[in-house]
Length: 406
Ligand SMILES: *Cc1c(COP(=O)(O)O)cnc(C)c1O
Image (cartoon, rainbow, N blue to C red):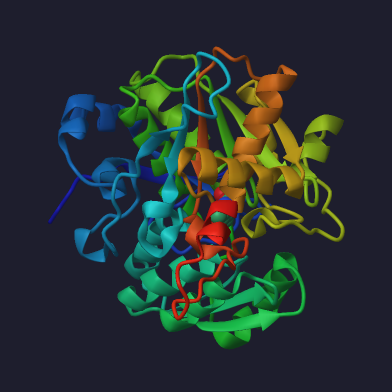
């Protein structure tokens, strides 16, 4: 089905230099991410909030805000609107505490948003083979969307990536390799093999369209909340695509006049075992030094260095937010509380945002009357969980004493 598109060009996020749309691009000449720019005046003349709200479905309803030109290139696995779930038992003050549950998306994580767009654009631009380093969820989403698009995919992940991620990636048709290093080592391998193997490099932010997919989190959130954005957004930050993408969404919505000028404070949440953005934020730096010996239970945010570091830091600072690290113990404690007190199973990365909320709403950087949105980026079912070993012998009479001691 033909639809109107509004892409005008791409732009280097660092120098502002422009690049032609509808061509294959990786990073800019400066080695920085490229951002897609739209004719927002024309978009605003064509579309209004009511029309958009009358449409059903998930991220593809925001087609006018997206770069795909031809409907037949859209690769979809049934992306739905992800719910905002209240956590009233864990809310500290009168300000609402909501979680956007991204675990409901295809492949069980919000990587589906980014990869749905990136793979659709790869198809549109005629790319046949792609490769990426991943901590797990991105590889799984790439595998699924690429297989559906008939594009070959190669995935390289650290050898301690959650087992389920490696297997789902393989099952969904990617060639997946476990690497005895971290995600940046995997990224180096992709760079080394690119020319000989004929791969297009799908590393985070090294192609321009994953951000556009992640941007739909911001569009969706705004629409879901009646175009009234929350006071604070806490985002588990690895490569930062989602944080950068949401900030881009809010800028576009503000330019259209669809949301008020006051935007949410963006909080980048990391683990104390890998906190390059927090260190750079606190030191007042524009770029982050790579983190040595990165280690955390929250695999998705174990990213020692990010090409988009300056974009993450810029969004956090422009928004009046901050970057904060939480320990693995507090991440697991937050996961356990959300599950046992509120019946909400979070992934460790999502639980990191809850841990940060609980820490900061007590410590002062978030006021108890402020509304906060957390991101649960993947289904908690993908991750190792504490054991449950209680057993009963059905050959004997029911052991009431044992039951009552539980
Ligand atoms: C990738 C990932 C993140 C980090 O997302 P970025 O946008 O790359 O910073 C957080 N949580 C989970 C579960 C992930 O898979």
